[in-house]
Image (tube, rainbow, N blue to C red; front, side, top):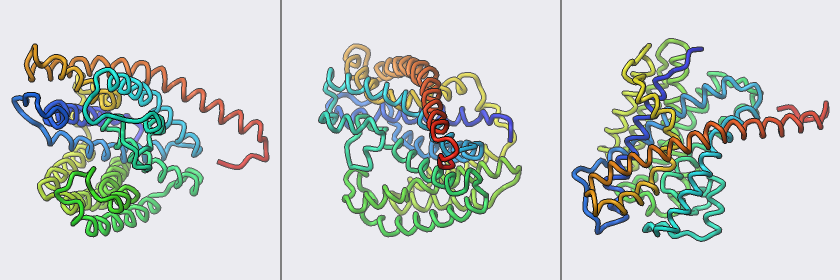
Length: 358
């Protein structure tokens, strides 16, 4: 599979826009409870996260299959995520301090820990509410990195199958156990021991990554891989056990649509220029929209109305996302990649023949 699968950019765009709209409607009012409500609410937009994880499973296995060294994978992922993330973190801290967004109080130590992107591991609050998903991504990256190390960058389909079967079994077992504690409960209010087990095992999101990985294998090989459907069904069951069967139905629709698009040779509407452009800036839009959007809505709704404020927030968020993409993703990522690659190469040269193999 040499040609770029551009439909993924369209899917990223849809996922990011769905999350943004969900936050600018009902999620905003969960923070500013006395402000007027918009003409419509879109809580289902939060399921854009599930679509992101499906796409990530596809893309990360594809990236790992092209890595010649485990460090290539690490450099690729770190340079891709961190520069734009740090920009969004600085912006969020400044806006939180200037406008005192409700439920955003945070100590200096907690803010510093957020620089790592893995604050969720230490039960430290996120500066931006969407950051938790990036910690989940990193856990998945670590698993792939370990596999690259153990196999010397020759991850076989058989190994992926074995890992996936074990992961799905653990996810289902944990979901059966944790369901009574999490069903109908805000994820932030799940008791700590249960939350830790869910976080460590990625019981809710692991099946989505697995579905994405097997979707990649299906497209690469040009044939349906049964495990794509098995992992998709596991994602649905886990969602039902941990949350509700309505949630499970939405996840089923997302998984089905994703699998159908992957198995199709071409899905033209996903390659429309606006969707492709939004797909390009989707990561930056995802990490900058929340705090910036809340501030814009709060400042402008008395003058343009609640729904007009949403439109203004979307416009300003898109502009900020474009700036974050240019500075953080284009310039920052390429600079970080060169820096990390040079560091790696210097270490290898200095170690000479005695350096440990990668």
